[in-house]
Length: 106
Image (cartoon, rainbow, N blue to C red; front, top):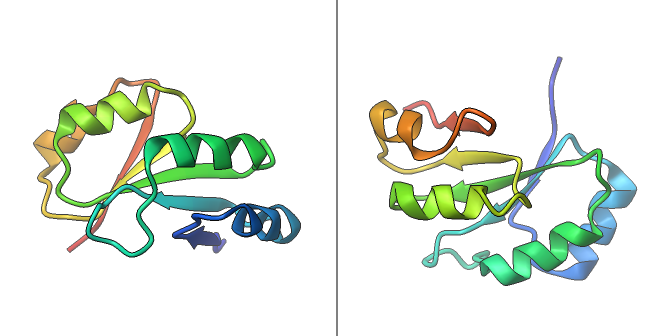
């Protein structure tokens, strides 16, 4: 079964559209070099507007594991997507067992 993710959400109107379309996942990009980058404060505010049955994904690119863990432990992101050159040892140890992580396949 295919799943749908809308990624790069950064505005209130993006969340409103997601709530109407009801994808499986939405993505907040935490990569500062991206034009779709959002701060954690902005992502937290947007997440509060998102329907609870839509899974929020944090997209990270070559981020320090400690920062990924810090953001994940704030409980507004459900899944971390590592979209850089992270190795599996880093992704396995970055967050606790209560959270999910997706590692991009090369």
